[in-house]
Length: 553
Image (cartoon, rainbow, N blue to C red; front, side):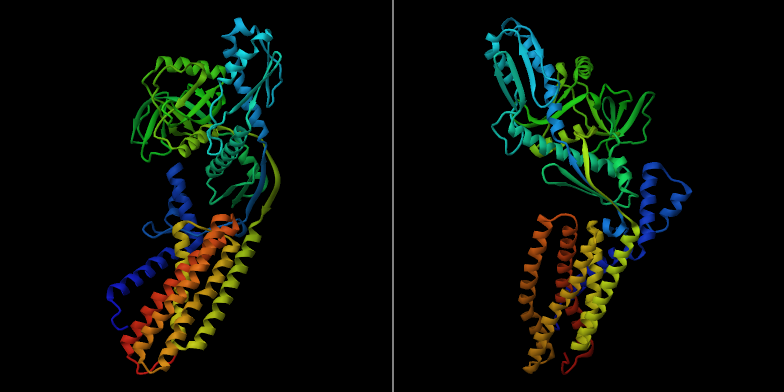
């Protein structure tokens, strides 16, 4: 026991110091938050005396990470939206008409004249004037089908083409509908997240709920109506010619040009012509697909007018890059390999299936894919959030005081050591929450309160073992050493099971359940650390100084 290495003590107290320093900004929450906001505004909009003064409210050399407050603590808006996924089927099928028409037009000698019968919707109906040409017409239209690009739809086609006498019917296959539903929800979540992030709100919760719903919770926003208006704004997608590429964001772009940063290459900027070749309004669809080598890629398609402009541009600029720009950020800048007539093209690269799907989502993120119907909306006022904070603070203090009093009364000086470790434990919890940028919710506070109670369990196990060993007259040093050694397995076993539960809650849960799981999991880690290492370091330091002949535990 007395040979507790110096380097271990330094590591332990070093970790404690780092954790407490990381937690320190939370004691000055308002000032740090104001400084962080001001620094972000200076980066985006430039410095003003007011912003500079606000940014100076907290030293830059100090950690400035805060525990984000969730919707139930800060107040804000809550929406539950239903995505009208059926609209996407109609858009996809409607976008197929020009391609079907052009395909059948090339076989006019066999199928005769062609005429569209439907008025829009999920089924495209085309009549040909020569019924005897129906088999060939069906074969030609079926040739337009593509493999379903999803993990569950492998080997199936995205189109279901049927015929009756002289009428051809085209609709999405069941597998493609399922894949489309998934992509539509993913795209909606991405668009909503981008729009919410645009206004600088912190830690919004935007999650898919079931097959066709999206949960949107934004702390700090004034009302549900304000949030609905925010989501209703339109993002801007454009395809611009690339002038050059630069690392200097402040470079002189020249007349008629603009400088936009790359969305995924930090420090890379593109000088682009201000006038786009085509805009997102001309984009009919973008889907994950595969290139001629079977590698994941992204295919896209424009409407007729956009297709004509894009075709003319690619014909005249083979070998030149063009940029896909979303909200003044360059998503991708591929090089035009060949003339792209017909308004469709493919973007290749070293994509995985997931990356190709994500890029397709971004390409389509210029507009919501389908209408959102808001099923539930609530505005949670800051007063309710403050009440929750006050109630949580009181609960923590009461739990803290009662536990500390009980431990001190039960174990005397060793109880005081445990109480010091308990205070450090709470500090380390907030330090880790600040480090990972976790969001604290009301259930999260409950998790911290629960952790406070659990934190002393490990100390109780150690002290009881020390007490038992001291009764066998093995000497104070040997009793302390055996106490820690024999309590270790019980402490680890008990906390591992709880940590597994916290992991399951975090994996399968959402929203407040995850908040509870995060604080519980972090609390377990810090409580085990403080019980096994911090209290031991304190006891060793005390023993080295006092050298007691007997132990009073």
